Length: 247
Length: 312
Image (cartoon, rainbow over all chains, first blue to last red; front, side):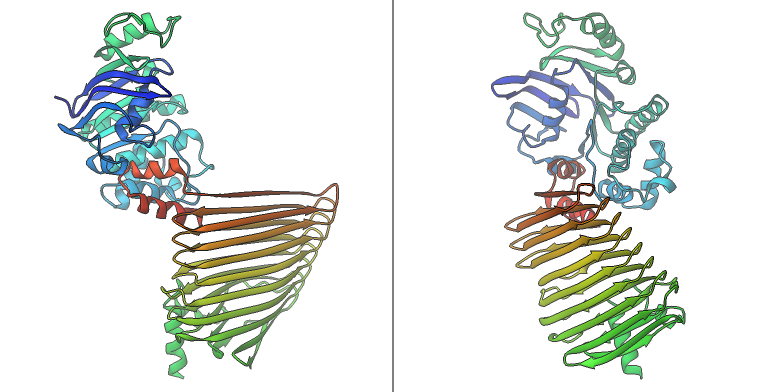
């Protein structure tokens, strides 16, 4: 039994299932990757687990620490310890980075805010009083998002495309932050189609059209992804395929 | 003598300003409670004259040409009693090439039925810079009616900036009416940030006429209304000359049964002038809200944080 269990989850939009009878167990304190091509349902899975509006009318069951969270609202799930870093984080007019991180932080301590910024490679002296608005680049905004999650010390952190918009020099910082979360006991779930991100995971799940195609070590899934998914000419059409079979 | 000192301290307790600043001989100030002047200090080049009138004070401010006032001038218009009327008539003449920044603290912390009327005439000379930051403290029950009125002339190459903020308490009624005329190469920058709740009413009418070439103007309103509060913003920027540039920006967040109206008007009389406008009224941004809620904030706390940021 993992810390987060997705059982027979189905989520459809306009009658089309985006998640199709999906079952996955995520293990406490481990780094996981959910991989697959665009449209495979990866971000939808993260949104359903988080309980975002528009993603709560699903069939099946999502459990956290053995208890169903299906009836919990977004903020109730967050207070249980589940959080999400958006692929494209929101920007906030007038809200200081220090205030944004403090709002998330488990300890409302300036030191915690500074350490979390430092962890993602942002100099606290330079960034604390900046605003979480359009004056930040996409990469800076992603790092601030991750810093807020480090300060929150969640039990489960869903990181949607954690490397998108991040320059090559900074990617290592993002991966370090994921490992810091793990060392603090957080279960990390990275949503990605990047092999670099997949390489950071201990366990990986491969999705295609909302179905689980394969699961295993990152190395196993990487091989499958490289050999079968990347050259695939029928992405997200896994008709006839079974879990573990060809996509 | 001790009574006014205590009153001044009492008034400044409601602000973010340490009243000890007023003992600084380089800091000009004027402190009024109701229709009584409690304290006043000018500095070289700045002349302040007051006369008591019925229910208020007539104030004449003269800044000598070329005078640079380096420290903010503090004006405190207070009304500590629960009821009453305070009328402030202000005639401001800012000499050419001078510079001054005023912080006006309008303090009505006990108000049950208080009316504050400001009627200002401001003339900013060529190349001068005049900034006026008006910060209000109202009572929690919102028993205040505030009528700031101003007619402003901004001379050639001059700079006029004003900000209006309610920092504590409830709006009650705020009814702002500013008219500004800008000469060539001058700059106008007016901002109002107000959050209303319960049955508060916010009315803003700001007008800017860019008469001279290369005059520039920005009118910004950031408003939030909750409960049954109402807001009406009518901002108009008119360009009469070539190369005048301007923008009217109104952002309003509506929650609960609040109602917001925004009417940005731009009028251009010259083919080489350019004015833009933007008005956005709506609920709190959904993605911002869900981001903060995904960190464990309740919807109300998340909304509060977003609105407070927007009002900065």
